[in-house]
Image (cartoon, rainbow, N blue to C red; front, side, top):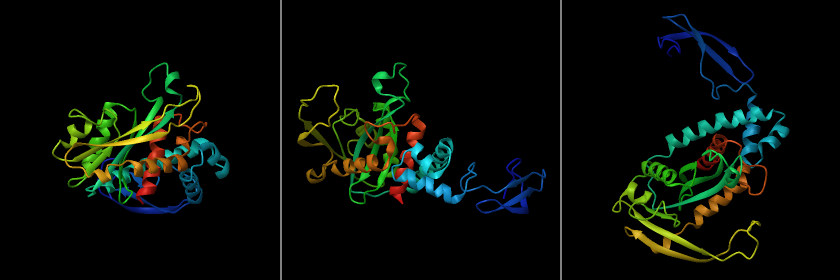
Length: 285
């Protein structure tokens, strides 16, 4: 054990028991500084049972204020738990999901909003308005290999695809929709993997025109899906995004922040990212 102050050698000094566990203390031989060993969830001083209850409620799609009422904790405490656990879940996924060998990867984006709708984001704040969660999903094992939340832009797409590339081992087939940032010789797939390093197929969906007024929300109806091999030798039978889109439905079901037409949307982009990391870690486990 090293000192947190001068990084010198520290030896066991004493111990005490808090409301959750027995904690050891150490004393530095060089500077005499005493300190406690690190806690599983630093900064959180609530009972373990309450902590587990809050995490379980958040994983089951309960909103922050409802979780606060059910657990008897302040909403700021619930958000602190989400932040701490979300950071650790993101670190867990980053360290665990590496060198993955898969045959088929499906990639899609999931819409949500932060603080307000895009049209009312008058200041152009990049952390407000519409935000998209990029997911890359193994068709066979249903593992979420890579995820990223941000604006639906070329920069965000490139960031996500580069992260995906760093987690894969060996050649794979990737299928996306026809979003322009993916496709083409200058798209994120070609620039990151190379046209000879991956089998890339694209699925284009054609939707029927809505007969409802523009100010009324109604999901469009897909009437046709077109498959196209972009480069490499993708298998036409597995050029598909149905599995990752079904996973999108899981997120909307078990994450309150993605439920449409409610007040459960995120007020901060960071909280949305923590919430996504919590869901992904739950799936990874």
